[in-house]
Image (tube, rainbow, N blue to C red; front, side, top):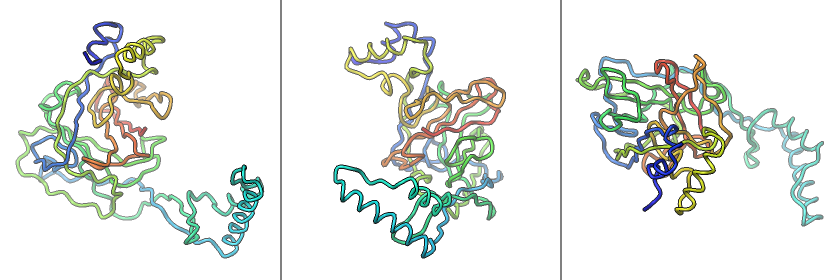
Length: 322
């Protein structure tokens, strides 16, 4: 019998207190309608309700030409570095502390240097323009995700949209770089005419999901080491290994597009995500990078996670990318 979360809990009951229901959304390219759950598909958006527009500052790249003197100095340092490497083949390409300081002064806080065009590139905050229309990312009907998410009385549709441009530490999202996100609940029975949404005049390609239909499946998700009592995680790893499986990402912190469940902290140690009210927030939605299906890329090909307050879901969401 293959290893499963349910069999682990049956044999090690201590895991039961830490289990959460999650729905793996499993998107695949298709042509969803407005009255279907989807990724990147059309939203059941009332024709008389304004479409959301992001007016937060957007992070944009600007290029600056190096002066002739700066280019010559950089080339001289580059030649000196290559000469040192030629004389010491077993060594590595290195710059001296003095050279590194000069390069730092030339870069002047820029993030990259194009040594063909001899332009340095930096990110700046752009507040110009009327704002950027948000784009549909996810629509979920309660019938497809009945248990993994809280459903307030009278609603049966959850919609996730984001601004398809970069944002650096936007309001309410410290230590965050990525698209701004908004969530909307609504009742499908109250929507008749549907709005044809505006298209953004600028967008990062990785933030424009291809339309996908969903094949949701409900699973039991467990946490990783940081959210378990001492020793229990090791017991779960031993149990999974004895059955030819891995605890992480097979039984715990399930990967992919997901509603509910537990987040993985595979790039960092645990980062507590706290609400403005002080309550520890819980994972709500996970957006996963991939080349197929939605063809979305967040962070360095990672996961964007939205967290909500378990005490009061009307409190502002928090975003995190791993």
